[in-house]
Length: 122
Image (cartoon, rainbow, N blue to C red; front, top):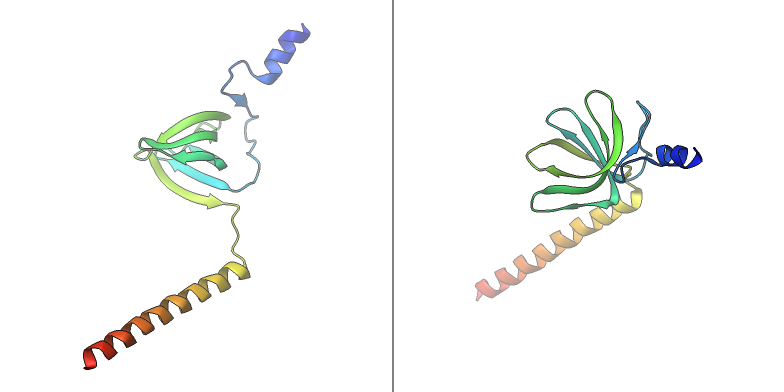
């Protein structure tokens, strides 16, 4: 009896672990996708990859009827309707690095243009 209870608690299928209806996956960094049939897939960071056929990896899947489960899956690019990153926040450090990068690119362009005008002036 204990072995049967343990088997039911851990999940009978090796690729699936069941969630209670309405239970959400943990809030972490990842990729949230909505499919054309309004199902939702959440791939955690480092658990998905882009392939020639689509996005593959382990994902929290919520179907349109409310069933939710965790499975190894591949979603075709043609079936994806929308995608967004989750858990990422912008910081002042990232903003300042972006501004510094823009200044460096503009400065490099100015140096190249100045050298080009000097070369064509003769």
